[in-house]
Amino acid sequence: MRCKAGQLLAGTIILVFERLVGLFRFTAVFLQHKNRCRGVNMANLDEIDQRLLAELQAEGRVTNVELAQRVGLTAPPCLRRVRGLEEEGVIKGYHADLDASKLGFAITVFAMVSLKSQAESALREFEDHMADLDEVRECHMLNGEIDFILKVVSRDLQSFQEFLTGKLTPAPNVESVKTSLTIRTAKHMPGVPLNK
Image 1 (cartoon, rainbow, N blue to C red):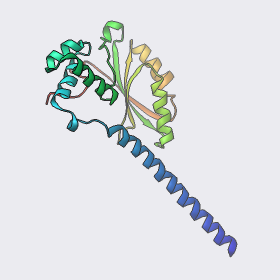
Image 2: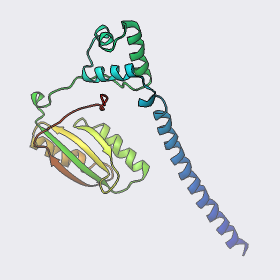
Image 3: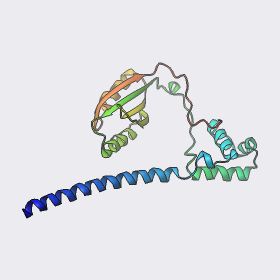
Image 4: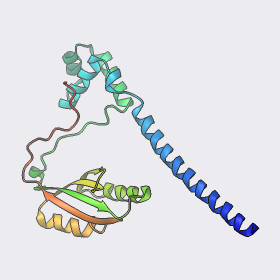
């Protein structure tokens, strides 16, 4: 009798422990997200900061002097504000907008990927693998039937087929991949709508 009661107690303790571990993992992920989002948001940006961001988003190579003139500041406070926005992570970087077709990348494909498991470790492993693939330009986790959507660029259909069969479908935990080839791009606007 004691042996069965001991086994039952041990089983209950293990079950409670597993649930607590799951709760701690959820709490850790939630707090990481909360800490990342807690700094600056649109509600605590003044009109000048919003205008600075709109100008920089439209033209990242503008000089500080020109930027200051556009938003009605002198150069030193303008630079201080931009550096503050960079330090807060609102401005993550500055990039050139390249013409893929002029560089020989004629194909853009969206790949919808379903995974065998949605355990956090499996999701992270897939994301890490996608981060290492240069052809994958964007990787977004979705809710619903499809787990991830990828934006993939390639030089031609042959090289895309080689990527698909040699790198994407054999990736960790991949169950299925559906692809859609873009015909044309009607709108390409990086960033967010700041002028509203």
